[in-house]
Structure formats: C-alpha cells, structure tokens
Length: 314
Picture 1: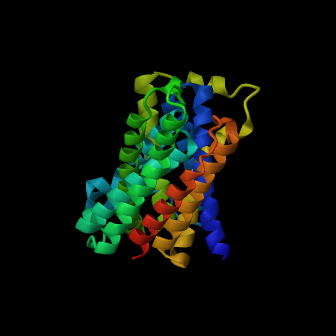
Picture 2 (picture 1 turned 60 degrees about the vertical axis):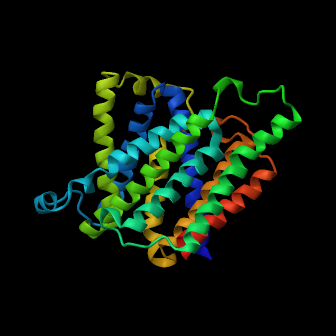
C-alpha cells in the first residue's frame, strides 16, 4: 500500500511541477529560459543523488561509439516536452495539460510496443489493448469536449475562454508532445540498460537537455539576463524547485518499477497526475487560473484511467 501511495504522490508532484514551471515562466518571460532553470536544477539534484549512491557521472568512450545515435536524444525530447507543457498550461489549464499528453503517450506507446521500435520488447496490438485505446479516447472526449458542448447548450452566447481563442490547436499540440514523451521514456529505458542504472540514465538525459537549452537560450535571447532579474525580491521560493520535482518523479519511477512493475507504476502515477491537475484547476493552486471542474469530467477521467489500465496491464 505504501508503494501505491508513493506512486500516486509522484504523479501529483509531476502535475504540480507544470504549474510551478508555468509560474516561473511568468516571472522570466521566456519558456526556454524557464525550462533551462528547471533542467539545470533537475540535473544538479540528480547529480547529488548519484554521488550519494557512489555512481559515476560520466560515460565511457566505448559506450559512445557502440550505441545507436538515437539513444542520446532523450534529453532533447524532454526539453520539447517540458517547454511545450509550460506553453500549454495557461491556455488549457492544469487538467488538460495533464491528460492531452497522456493521450499522446498512450497512442505512441501502443505503436512503439506493436512494432518494437528503439529495441523495445515487441507487444502486439491485441483486442483488449485496442479496446483500452478506444476507451481512453472516449474518456478524453468526455473530459475535454463534452463540458464545452454542455456549456454551449446552456449559455450559447457565452464564451468561456475568450482570452485564449480556440483551445484545440493547443490540445493537439499536447497530444504530439505526449507522443514525444513516450518516445523519450523508451529511449531513456534503453539508455538505462546500456548504463546499467536508471538513475544514471535520468541524469544523462537531464544533462543533455540542459546543454540543449543553454544553446537555445544563447541563440534566441543571447543572454540570461531575464533569469537574473527573476531572482529579485518578491518572488515565491517554490518557483525554483520545478526541476527537483521532475527529478523526484524520475527517481520514484526508478524505485517503484521493480516493486510494482512498470505497468502498475504508470497507472498509479497517471492517477496522481490527473488528481494533481484537478487540484490545480479546482483551487487555482500555485498561481494557476481557477477553472472549476464540471461533474461530467469525472466520468471521462474514469474512462481514461480504465483505458490505460487495459493497455498497460493486459
């Protein structure tokens, strides 16, 4: 029971991380510099954990020359995933920023498993897994689209979110981002096998992501002045801990997978992500925009969880 509680907790932490990083972006003004801060903090956090466990920080030249090129791009995919979530959060809120990438992760996960991409174990698309995918899709539709249909029927002249325009391009972007996140997970899993350490693989992924963002910030902004200005007085302390929260999520998955199994770890962490998104939207936590949850959304969330359970556990 303690392991299940921990899995749900790290899922909640991941949802809160998105809100924290979005708030940090509000102070810094640049999603790239906000992501750079988050990745840097996460890299330092994981480096400390590695050193405490007396594991090496570097990689051997033999590993560099013998492994496929794509094994090193997990950090770049993580940059895209985190930065896009920071962009999505103000436009579609906490719960949708959680569930739209989940849909992309589920779809891409099924595709990767079916074809055995990136040297992953091949798992054919069975009838049960296909049913789970359809149930998850229905859950997304009920959660995202049905409340808007009901709102339009009750108050057709109102516009519930005029400031941000049509949310569907952002939702589709969230699905694509989730697909990249599932690819990153598979690649980092392969890297973990090559390094014989999931923790070491997470550190290398964070380090590569930090270096990528360093170059991106230099190319786009030419300096890090916005970060220095954001360190002034009057800023909440918690805007700087998003990277550590991401590191805790990675560590939690590495710790729980041998105990609960990968499938159950994913499902319970997913439950935590959804719960965290609900809390952020319902109560406007961490400076987020208050978006009360519509009761019918709970039906959609249950369908989504049920679909993921069918896909992951059967």
